[in-house]
Length: 227
Image 1 (cartoon, helix red, strand yellow):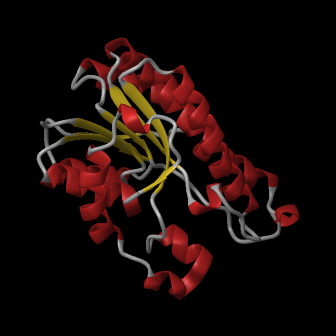
Image 2: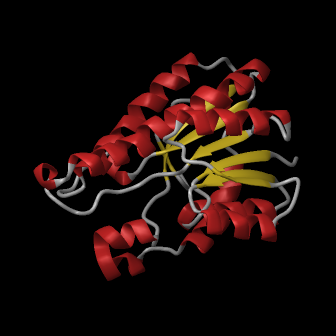
Image 3: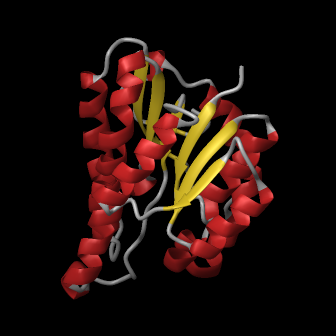
């Protein structure tokens, strides 16, 4: 059965790899990112029924306008992947500038809430769909110099488990850790050591079939891809 998949943060990394793999398997992907160049490339590569838009998820007005257009066509997603996120530059918490801290929180927490606010009511009306809010190993443990990122991902665990209790039967909300993947974000934290982790493309080939099997039985479970 072909599904409509909504993915935030499709410009690069996991979001781009997931997009390519879902489409390869015949599913419809609706995605957003902040990079105009990356979105233009996706539009050129993948035409309708797929849809890609430049949207800053931290801007509630932009998300609202995007949702109105998407819900009209192709309609509510079967699987919503809140993937878009930023990490702070490595530093002790007291050295992280206020503006940088705010940006991490605005994208990683408020951005997820904005997408939920404007897409999930249509999913609830159908009593159908799975919402995966991307957490992290740093949403369940901590390390020095990534306190803002840890705070945002711990928030995903609590926010999503509370959301799971609010959904009607037949739906699911899942705080999801993708595991350790060799992305630009991980390299910013671990440097060349990130090269020991899987690349996004092979990760996505294993992750996508697993994601497609998620359902009401998983509601509220704190999962890692492959569990």
